[in-house]
Image (cartoon, rainbow, N blue to C red):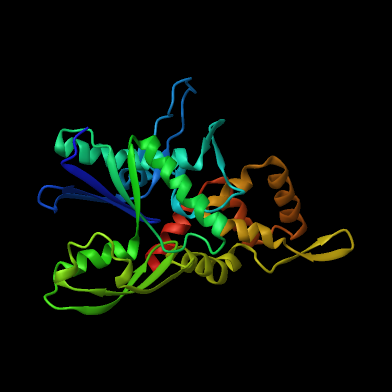
Length: 315
C-alpha cells in the first residue's frame, strides 16, 4: 500500500470531486470533478455477471439522451443515504443496495485518480454534511452507508471530515492573519453552516475542535428548490387540482400522482400496471382532459427527465 498519497472525495448530490494530496508536501497535485450521475442503458440481455453495463458522470447524461431517454437514469443518490425505508432499488430485475450504486460512482472517481498516479490508492477522506438527518439514527445510517460505498469502491482506510470544515481548510491557505469565518456550504441536498477561527499559525494543527465556534445544517438544498418549482409551477399543467367523476362522486385527482411526479426518484411508481390502469380510468373520467393526458404522455414516453432538465435550466 502506497502511503505517500491520500484521496479526498466530496460526494455531492449534484457533483462529486476527488483530489489527490501528496502527504510528503501536503500539496494537492490532482483534482477531478464530474456529475454524480449514474445511468444503466437498456440491457439487451441480462447476464449473470455483476455489474450491469453502466455509465457515470456527464457521459451518462449524454448517453441517456442519445438512447432516446430509455434506460434507468439516476441522480441525487446522496439524498437516499439517510432514508431507512429505501434500502434497495430494482434495476432490470436485479436488486442493488443504495451503497452499491454509490459505490459505482465512487469507483469511477477512484479510477480517474488511480490512472493519474499509476497506483491503487486505498486511503480516502470523505466529506459529509454537518447534518445528513436530524434523527441521529438516520444520520449515522447515512454515514455507515457512505462508508460501505467507499469499501465497495476499493478503499481500505476510510475517514470522514465535515464538508464546511474541509472548505475552511482550503480558505485558510490564503490568509495571513487570524479570522473568524462563516463557512456556508449550499448543496443539492443539504445546506451547512460553520463559524470557525482560522489563521496561518493554525494550519498544521491536527485537532481543530477548539477552533470551531458553532456549526449546524439543514436538509434543504437545490433539490428542495427543484421539487417546490415542480409542485407549484409544473404539476398544475399535468392535472393537479383537476376533478373527475367516480360514479356519483366528484373527486380530485389523487395528489400522490403529483407528489411522485415531482421527485425523480419516485417516478418508478408509475411502472406499476395497477397504477397505469387507474390513471387510464381517471383519464376517461375527466373526459380526456388535456392536462391529465399530459401526465400520461409524460409517463408513457419517459419524458420526466426532459421536464426535470428544463426545470433546472429555468432555475
